Length: 217
Image (cartoon, rainbow, N blue to C red; front, side, top):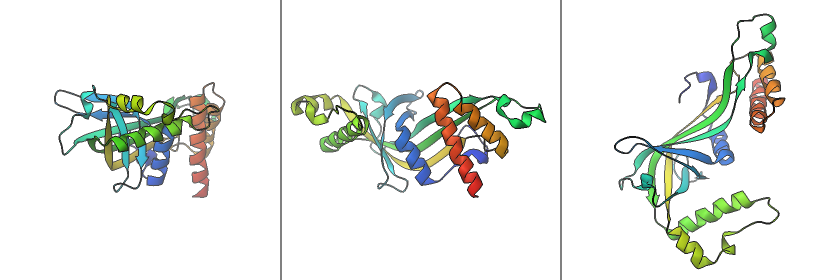
């Protein structure tokens, strides 16, 4: 991870699995000969497969990133959560000590493992159905995969390839002002909660979770 401080490291599998399910749109990074390859795509998490779970997704067939050796290839998937600028003006401690500077708080999960393609049509159809149901959930007029003619769906599936990544390493970096005292952390939370964007509000809610954990320790 880019940030070395252990104060911001999150290793609890249940917390990281929950974050992946909530974020579920991740950046796939591989390193074929000649450089890096990246793709942005939605993922489903199967926690029952592998020691740390397995990510399942799909790529366009024209995208060469799925073309890996039979044994698979090392890959990284990054899930980026809410992030925002934190102003030192929000810290009550600034009144007593003006030696304060801005920072950036954020939430991210990095998943490492071995990427492999799969060509099982039933498995790919099930994945597409699962992704659709997740995103259509709660809509007044939900669209289902079965709303489209089956032969059309099957024809479209020929343009994509299923991929999966058995998780070998699962690490989160939750930089949520935990290195500040309780009053300054609350100042950061309140400042973000009053900020104009939903992203900042989401980050404020994430900080509130760490505050509760801090109080419970």
